[in-house]
Image (cartoon, rainbow over all chains, first blue to last red; front, side):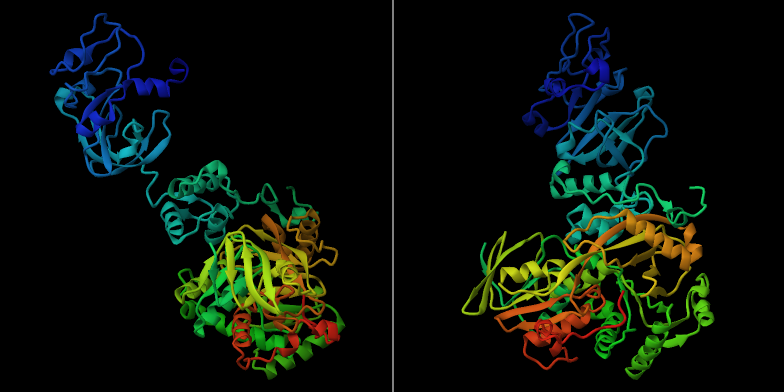
Length: 254
Length: 382
């Protein structure tokens, strides 16, 4: 699958994930290098001997998690940007994920970005805690994101735009923001139909083509319901906005 | 999960929420409102949401006047979180037959005698109020500037939240499955979430009120009939008042949001609980609208929907208890006017249930008037 999609399978991920016990102890390197290629800078750069010696330069790296200190030197030395540091001791609820990021512009420390998973799908809102870009990193900046702990093995990239901000528009026709949606959910509105009627989301010219899924996603996330089990709103005619004059049989060219 | 309540109200629309609020305000404790879906999910949330004082019988004038005066202060009275969006742009009711002209002149005299500021207008004067109308299609009109429109979801929410603050419990997504009685008295309500033992049940179930009556062994002479509405894309403010005609069969209003909402009646509509949409409505509505308000032909329709009118033979509501079952009260059969009468319904029903003298005499709006043959016809209905 990886060859076709570029996305590692669950088994691939499982094979390189440090144990929960190790993750609770502090920062650790996670090497997501799944193909045999002639490359070994991770091994040569590690001062702690935490990456086992390569018998063949085509070998895949193996980390000795007990020796790894999570220093991050291997992160900037990996030409494939395949190494991440995760630190689940960052706070009670959040983990730190350090991501090599060779794009411009770099995010600003303290700003919020949209954390993405390995498939590039949005996972959560993340705060940029640190941006390291020292000369020794040789133009591989490392961005540290604070994410909810359960996403430490999910989040592997980010979009610099803060799509999970309260200011993001969910319904563009009727201008409902994510913040307003969250407030309605807090007030106790629990279904798409209720939210539609109380906020007008989905009642505009597009008839919910964009917001329907976005509202369901947020509801699913907040209330723990499964999207596929949630009731939809009624799809009502007409499919496309049509002039009254045309409906009345006038000479309108619609 | 079984429990006990002093009053159980069936129906979480404007009527049920208003009755709950008014009872709680008068000090009744332990009130439970049962709603099959969510609040305002039935006729309340599907209605045109216009409110008017221009009626042809004294009592309807007084009931609607009381309600509109309540709506004027409802944001404060109910402590609404969302503005109920009450816009008093007036109702322009046009006459297109000589019979209507005659009736409307009588109506205005009646309304004025009750303190309702309506006026009779010539077609030319009517056109000054709605400049884009085709005045050649009408013979005259009446106008009352205090009539208007409000948001049915926010209004119901405001009643419900105010009731909750007074201790009323709302059970949404709960279906009534039976009503228990003993020796001619109500004793409780079965729901899919458990049994509630109660001496008083109020049937405010709108289109489903006949079904609820059957559960209690009470035959309520009402039937549900589908009515349809369409809404356009929002545009800049263009039309202040509601445009309405009984004989030409249209009501058409621009909401504060900018969209136009319009509907019409149809005697041939199904009388089951169907709320699907029909093409026939869309086509006929568009034709009527384009003929009377030509400029609106350029507006795009974005959605149509339907809801239920709960009709009685005389198009007037049924208020009060029933002689065959003590503790069973009816607030149903509003015939398309339940939303605008919401505040009056709540106040009067709370007075009836508590045995107080009623603010407006509604004693002959009881269920048995149909059996007695004492119908009270209202000339001004769509």
